[in-house]
Length: 238
Image 1 (cartoon, helix red, strand yellow):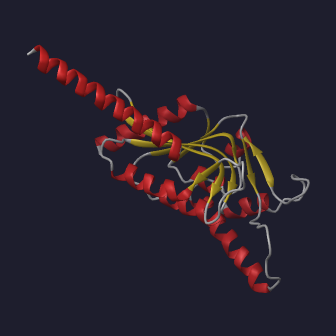
Image 2 (image 1 turned 90 degrees about the vertical axis):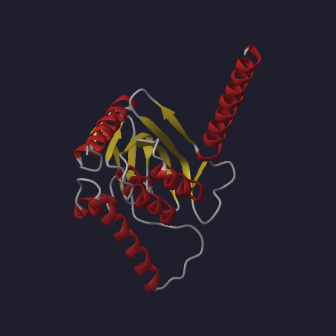
Image 3 (image 1 turned 120 degrees about the vertical axis):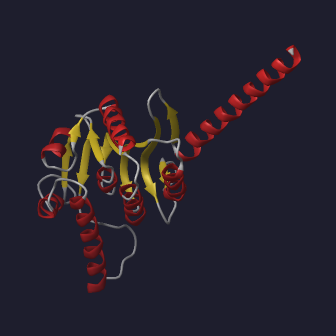
């Protein structure tokens, strides 16, 4: 009996070690981890640095790779043990189509989702912030809203302008549909000429983002988790 008990104990220890290794690997590869709580299990996803899409981010730049996040979001949606998703953002933006694709995926999830902007939620990070069912921002964080732009060689033709204009409209529509800000007001902020020295656009601090209707509430980790718990409980009752 003692031998069997010791064997089970060792097996349990091995399982715990393997579980810990998997969690560390998830954090390293996809900047995410599942946290088991007393009442709910939350998957925490961090979107940091530059959102990397079809092309690699520049050397030395921290990046969130969308090809890793897409299957992760699918697994969170399918995992019955996970009650909700917490998205923490501190991003400078990045690939527009990749960011918009991730935003659409988060917005279409059936599970409770809450976003929290820390530091910054700039450029294509704005749609990501509003894609959650409830959004929060700390007072010291900022969000930059500006027109769609690109680097490198472009064809100087009306079609190029039309392409960027249509992409910009897609972003305006998505953000206005998933927040309290109107598309007209967002466009005005996007085309402002007196906020940014070398570009068009607006920089909104935490409370300004809430007053504008872009983000739901000012708050931190405690408030975001509290909202996620309430949403998860309501979903269970239904």
